[in-house]
Length: 335
Image (cartoon, rainbow, N blue to C red; front, side):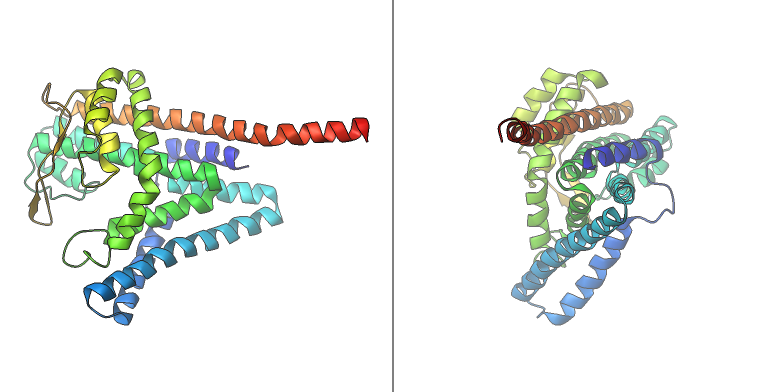
């Protein structure tokens, strides 16, 4: 059932994306995180130790609560009728994926740049990145969009798909809870340096394997998207650790190598300039069309991820079932 639900969810995301105004679990998770933060800050001392303790409580309660609630809902509907369980898994799986939404939002940035409307491009890219965008040049806007496509290919597509294929919608939504929590409180600023530490560490752990799978899928998909597979492999091998996060540079380095451009470097966050190392070689100037090239690579990497994931799940099922079949045949033949 999980495999079929994953296929349905993937197709729904490709066709429909995230419809405007449609109820989304990430919105509910965001509101829950905000309320829990307010409550926990009122219950723990406003000291570094107190904030770290409150953050650890949040980092435990939100994922565990998400898994228990969604797991019970899927179990209950499956008990009523298997098709209801399948429908809920597929529905939540669709909402856990963000491939079409990311492609659309980043393509809007490209269209604004091609139209020569830099201000509109800055506003469009601000919807999908966390950095300050008000003073970005056209190349800065392009670079920011390409980077977020590469990074979110893992966070928004491959990682939730990875967890879905292991544990269905409950595990995929638990991952989304962790990822949303990190995006809200996992900052190294005055407010969240201590409170958000546990959330950031948990997100790093949850993304460790999917980020590396996503990078390898990006490299494999590069020729299908018109990119440079050899360049993607070379830059990934060299620059995959060029980031404060253990995961962010994985797909960014593969993307930079595939496109033959340089990504990352200094960027402004909340008014403060952060000096980040560059990723890739500046063999040519980055251009708006690179956003669409990155989108194509993301889509092909996602399709490969789905196909390989379904094949591996079928292989594991086969390895489990073959001894069972032999046992049944043996019992009917000799006993």
